Amino acid sequence: MTIEGNGNSVGPLVDADGHVLEPADTWQKYIDPKFRDRAIRIELDADGSERLLFDNKPFEFLKGNLGGLGGIDLEKGGLGVQTRDYTYAEGSPRGGYDPAARIEVLDQEGIDRVLLYPTIGICWEGNVSDPSLATAYTRAYNRWIVDFCSHDPQRLYPIAHISLIDPEGAVEEVVRARKAGCVGVYLSPDLEARGGKAFIDPAFDLFWGTVQDLEMPVGFHVVVRDQPAFSRFSTPGTPGDGLFFFAFLAIDVMAAFTSMLSSGLLEKYPRLKCAVLEAGGNWISAWLDRMDHKYEVMSSVVPLSMKPSEYFYRQCLIAMDPDEGMNAEVIDHIGADYVIWASDYPHIDASYGVAKEMTESVRSLSLDAQRKVLGGNAMRFYGLPD
Image (cartoon, rainbow, N blue to C red; front, top):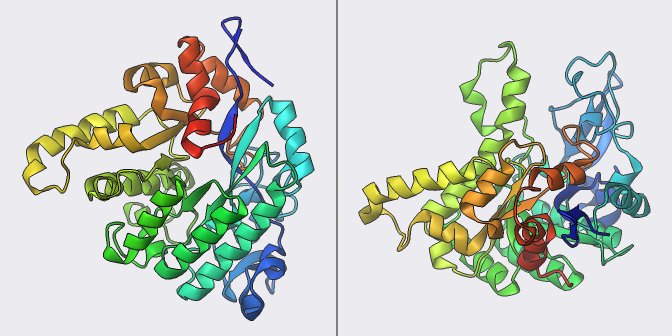
């Protein structure tokens, strides 16, 4: 499958951030037996509402409305005022949990390959304090996603979920996951998911070195929390609060990326690769300019030998959304080598037809630039076979 650009083929389309909707019994089936009684699961509350349980404790967010974890087929504008609750199953199209159905979705959308990230997996870190259990949760998911992608390993690519709250377990699991076929790593961007430690903390040295040697890009992605880090900036009950929180999910990702740059992590690990996901991408040009300017003022006390933007250009990519209004202009400004795109299927803020929409958004660029952004960069960055 190819998309035509200015009358010529621009090659394969690679969705660099698609999602799965893990079956409700994933962890009960795939977790190490000694942790099975603490597995992630969905249960009914006393009032009949569905809720997620992590380490046998309830997750308050989306209680009774777990359909919002998927929800691409639910009414978009009605989020938050639905006339009834939607179960996890009701919000889960088959393409989220059935690999054969996912291939059908790819065919309908004109997408050749997809890198797959979790959904329930972006919810539990911060609610689990036991490092061994955190690694057990990630290992169970990683086993399942490898099985899912084995249906068509030329089109479905598993991204391993790794939890830094267990630094030693993270190293062991990322090595195992790479051998099993995972091509990259999803890391939660928030402090709670790494026990309040900075990325540059020596506790993570072996992990970063291992990921670098394995040539597995790490990706920061938005997360769902009962109490997100930015909650102190809003007063509960404020009109439009839901929109504020939904939009601000991107801030965790931007903060993690900025911390990675400013702390010298990419200086210390020059072959470590990082993808910035589901935070939009049109902001990146202004942000790199801002960081470079502030670096000029503070360079004597910052552990960097180059401008922040130079680390981005050497080691990073950013995912742009198909509906962003200045994709072509920003790509033209920063260069076509540094951009990928994502569908976010099957989440509630995703849409159908996004491959065509993304293709149209970069139509004014050269054919070579279109090839890179629509698929070539993802294939190169993740080492996918031609």
